[in-house]
Image 1: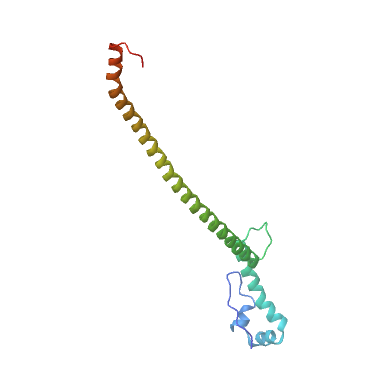
Image 2: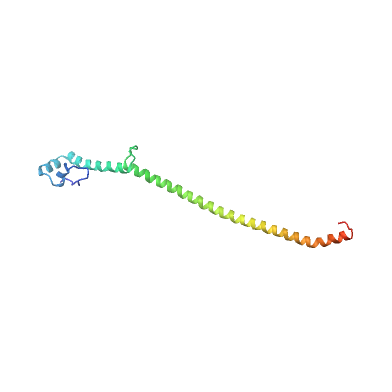
Length: 144
């Protein structure tokens, strides 16, 4: 019994009609009797199909098989996913460091502002306390 091959777009009717039952019974017996002919009838449409796939998926300048192309694409995806995971981890670490440094910067800035205010207040208090003393010393001609 011969295997039925479905007609493809590239077939012009040819010998697949004999396999599908639309031809004469003599042709069927001839094909069944010759395994090489049956194999050719099965391989030719498959090769045409694969040629269309290579045109669709492959760069004609790179003569690899479709399986190799898929394998390379899968390897590339795995490799890039590992790289992306590493970049994401590094980015997360950098963001944590940034947040920590930003917090330290804000603390230093607030501390600096507090020290400036404390210095100004000390100068005001010193001015209020020493000004009368300076006037007293000047009036009485005393040396500090």
